[in-house]
Image (cartoon, rainbow, N blue to C red; front, top):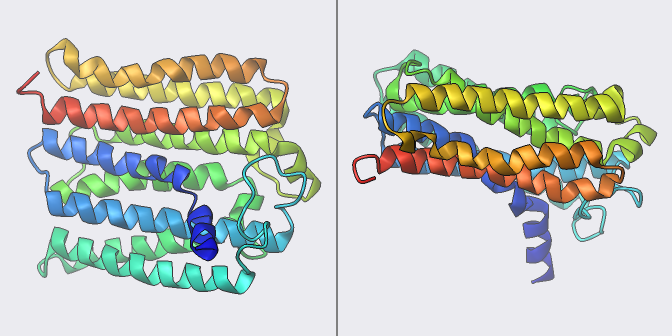
Length: 304
């Protein structure tokens, strides 16, 4: 039972709602265009959850072996840091998760494209491989990009542009219907979550040469960067909801930004990095709320 709880801890369940926000958002757009498929939706959710859990295992392992997870770290204690899981166990967990996720991703690709679109299937299979590599090399290896201030770029791409637009393409096999706008929203908010995480850990990260963007920018500029991410995400979401059609109900997803506007004020006034942890959760859950409200408004538009 202790070991099971350790694996649950390493999977970091609180990160999962953010990871599926892009899938829910893309699925909402698919409903709007009449391309939604419940099978693709379920398989896409499972694939994304697999990638996120793999990334969490890899982060636990990578930061653990590099000594980044130490007594100075502010966030929740990691499984390897706490001695609950060994480096060997985490490596096995990463391998098994990667294989299972790739199998589900392969099934997803087959359901979406069948036997008739070999080139598209080949492209998306390689995107799946790229996602696995990106999930692992964020903190693992001597050239881990999370230690080179590139984490924000990869999160923006994989959670936002590739996550939302790629999932929508699985449904519709085209990239119309202004799908880039909600993709920008999810990508920017996901980057905001990572930035808050890195702002929280900025001082201990700097001491172990983990050069996140927050470390390079410093406290004041990181706060300005966070504000820009949230405001640009709101602008993209507002334009998309305006283009959705008639009726005031289409603007309901924008309610998810109310906690984010308060979050900006809290972040600017913050003087204690430890107090940023609740704000991290606020941004992640607000992103998830945006995606759920968008799906609900579109799915139930004939009833409300």
